[in-house]
Image 1 (cartoon, rainbow, N blue to C red):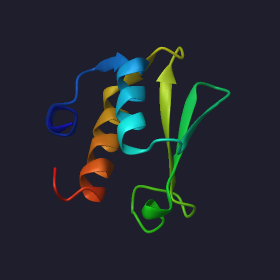
Image 2: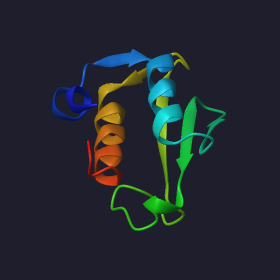
Image 3: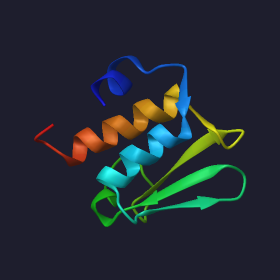
Image 4: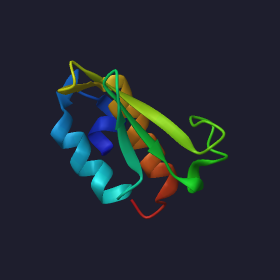
Length: 85
């Protein structure tokens, strides 16, 4: 996660992102048409990078890869929620 936050790679396979989501947001994400993963967690309601319902989206490239800018954002949100990281 530190690598993603501090120096995100250009893109990673969606499966890597799914593993992180399953660890930190189990059961709190869904896939939407148009290659989006939507994460919703009430702990994120007041987070500046999230919507009013405590949600944020991760766009997948061709449904198989996730770009670095989304990795960086995801990692920062996880660090914000988990002070012990």
